[in-house]
Amino acid sequence: MSEPAFAIRALEMHSRFVWDFDRVRRSLDFIAEQGMTALVLHRNDIVDRIIWPGRYFGAAPQAANIFERYRDSFRTLYEYTPTRRSGPYHRREYLRRIVELAARQGTQVWFQNKELFFHEIFLELRPELTKGGTLCPNEPFWFDFVEAKYTELFQELPGLAGVITAPGTGESRLSITANRCRCKLCAESTPRGWYGRLIGAMHRPIRAAGKSLVIRDFVFSKRAQEDLAAAFEAMPADIAVSLKNTPHDYYPSFPDNPRLGRVGDRRQWLEFDCMGQYFGWGIAPAILIEDWRGRLDRARAAGVEGLVFRTDWESLDSHSCFHTPNLANLHAGAALGRDPGTSAHDVYAEWMARAGMLEADTPGIRAACGVWAEALLGASWDAVAGTLYARGCVLNDSSTFPVGFDHAWWLAEEKNSLADWDPSKTDALAPTQEALDAVLAERDAALATHGRSAAALDDPPTGLRPEALAALREHMRHCRLYLSGFAAVTRALMLSRFLSVPQSAAARREAEARLKQALGALLELAADFAKVEKENPRPAVVTALSAERLRTLYADLLARRGASSVA
Image 1: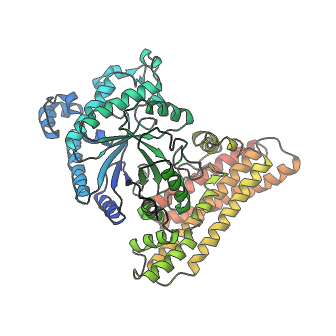
Image 2: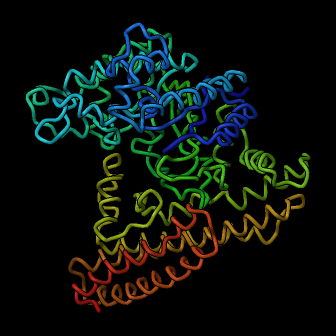
């Protein structure tokens, strides 16, 4: 007997500007087809895009909707924010339509953002918010502002199911996590107290509207996670907690989020990234079916009720998992959220059938193509893990190449530190012979894994459309270039670091020769990438295969080589 499905199985869409309506319809269709339950619309300032709030621009307290507020305050809005004055009510109408369409098929819609967020006009209207050139997160105005903002939000969009917010990240406009203010209020404040005031200001109007608040445990350090976890204890019992599946962003090499199952009696959600912000954007497919199967089993055991699967990323325009084989991750999330026993080849077959890759959707063709796709993509994460990562450490900048020696080690050992969560990794990338040999061997093994998998393209199954096979061949060609680029980058970085400290004469001679080869490989790959830039119009492809980034790193490493008298 299979385990019961997770109660909430949500698809998350990101946007920097506006959610393209065709993308929304496609996502809603996917939700309906796959038996999911919710659509999450993510933008850091999504609430501020549709709320002024009117009360600060002269709207009467009894104003019941955005048009009554605008009727009272249009002159003031035009005086202070002429380019924004009409934007909120246009976007409000657009989003009301999305909520209504979702409701017709029984799909909830949630907003997801990061707080505090606000329009810069408030810094002019309330000069006390800035002290000594820095923003003060503890000024009482902010908590009044937040309560007014969410009161108006649910007057405008009563069909929303609720709000998911992350108060513990410096990616908001203002947070205690990144506070630089040194005023008396801040000196007397604690992170726990600030989180409590902010969450309370959100929760009161959300609860009054009969909706739900979910707090995201989205942090960049273990200390910040502990501060936010302490605030959880004092939150009202109806507030749920949403955790990334790993403690710091969606790094598949990292352990489970240590807060999993440790949020008291609160409802828990768990978040996953399908597109691959840190594992190749799908330019290098990285299908995580078996990794997720284990994480979802542990999530069930920990009492998780909700799952959120992210399809894109707001910092990468015009790209999502719908554009790449990583769409199989979304199918995996939907299927495993319903039934943990779903086989990998069934996930692949469903992806291929729904993507129109099959000549006919028959059981025989599905089965053959599902098995074949597993041979092609089943080890795809292993190839990415051995190139974009190094011994589990994140040696990529949101899937792009580091642009300098110092940049690379900051990424791997500070910003994205695995050692913060797994102390055994403290010296994983140290300038030692053991670490160097391990990392270089890892590159060779990963590229060999990709080569073995790509060989499946030479023996396609009956029933696969020729156009689909041609597209997969082109995709895997770009993948090979991309993985080769990261392999070359990591070799050059590790050899440069190895040579930055004293070594034996024999070890130094060997490393110098290998570094010379690695630097030459960077230039050769940059030339190959430049050809792709001319032939492929997709921005995500040419951003991932960036000749300019490779050349920038090459110049930095070459300068270091010269400074070390290696040449």
